[in-house]
Image (cartoon, rainbow, N blue to C red):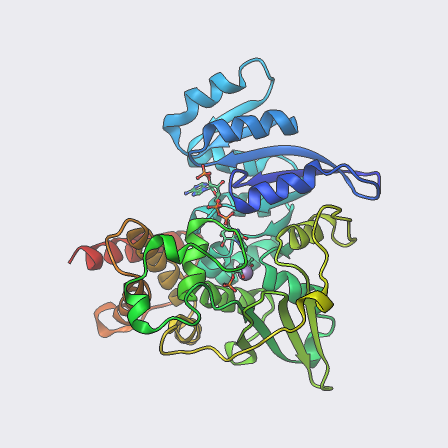
Length: 393
Ligand SMILES: NC(=O)C1=CN([C@@H]2O[C@H](COP(=O)(O)OP(=O)(O)OC[C@H]3O[C@@H](n4cnc5c(N)ncnc54)[C@H](OP(=O)(O)O)[C@@H]3O)[C@@H](O)[C@H]2O)C=CC1
Ligand SMILES: CC(=O)[C@@H](O)[C@H](O)COP(=O)(O)O
Ligand SMILES: [Mn+2]
């Protein structure tokens, strides 16, 4: 493989961002030659500048406008162009590249990711919130601009790797670690601190997705993500607790075959798969799976009483395309409130369910599916406003 692959990376300073940079900087035989186009961050201006210089990027954008001057100063004399604010992030995504890695947290990724789609880039999609909140519109936009969506989320990447005949699929089976409270009682979960909630047993990830794993809202978002990405109704998607996070997901077919993708819990595998697709590339420093050493893998059915988030996803998909947008927006506000010690751990899912029920009630009349991205942004804003009010009340 000698062709140069131009890559832009939204969310370069995060967990996915740093795993991606480590792949891009790998120096080994039989891998594509990568050229970094744009990098972005929200606040981590020094880290962003350092990464831009190290990777010889063309362009760096910082979301927080107050950090623009600092970024400019840090990049002075390097020839690296820079920008700030949401328009800066969108400009970063608008630069011509082959692959755009979407790794910003939350629905904030939607506008810049859509810009990458408009450029017809391959979208290595780690961010799940953008497809959850915009659903079919997001897919239609990708189709319209001939942009290929390559799932990076480990479960969806696993399914993508083993899904060979959609017509013969009986079930998609998403594995879930169960998070740090898999064996905790409800009383213990009520008292859970942010520090405990972000201590994921297997994966090292950003705070928001770590809390989502702890409530299992991550699996809720992933069920919706899988439903849209693989055009599969919720009743054909199962969730299976697998505490070791070695089997990343499974697909069962109507001839009785079940295909799974396995590997150590390390995001460099799905990231490299997306970057090299339709080929594969080596990842030399990554620990290899040794099942003999691991000995046994275990599986459990999820406990809906302690983790009601998965049922919430099913309910949302049944209600209509507006509902995943609402649960995503409310969850973002509730997770933030939990991390700032404003609400308790169990209040995260409770607030989300309460707001979903409110939007589904007569108070809002018959909710309709969004016709445009403006509709998506408007509902996202309203759900956030009402969630904040509910939390303050
Ligand atoms: N981490 C993982 O293993 C996995 C992550 N994902 C998904 O990937 C996405 C990123 O997760 P992760 O890397 O863990 O998150 P992190 O919190 O580690 O990193 C988030 C990145 O996005 C930037 N960012 C945060 N908020 C904003 C905003 N409002 N506008 C613009 N940029 C912003 C951050 O910049 P700054 O540093 O300046 O704050 C940082 O670069 C999420 O959607 C997550 O669900 C999916 C599967 C696995
Ligand atoms: C690595 C990844 O894809 C995460 O989404 C991970 O799956 C989180 O673990 P949970 O299975 O605990 O949600
Ligand atoms: Mn995942």
